[in-house]
Image (tube, rainbow, N blue to C red; front, top):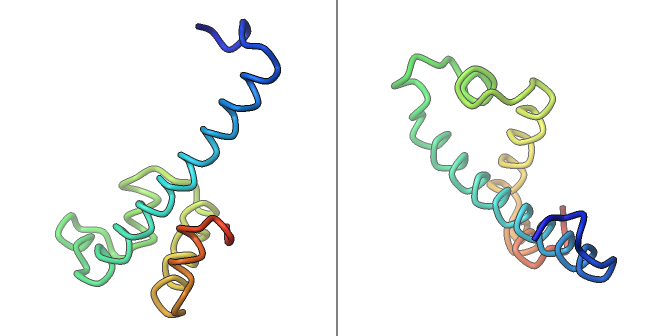
Length: 91
């Protein structure tokens, strides 16, 4: 079924589901980035930093990479942030 053929109600439900999935995927990425940074695994592929890995290795823009590094550092350093992200009470 194409998006164009959905009713408004179906479209809104699917959009909400997609937003939830995106938030869950972002949390999973942040958890991976915590471990990549902890291990400095990016250095094995000759990246100078986690930021460099995000930009050159994962092809994020510099602003997207900066947002993800900052979110990962906040999650790592502040108790409760991960729980709030899982609950979707923090974005």
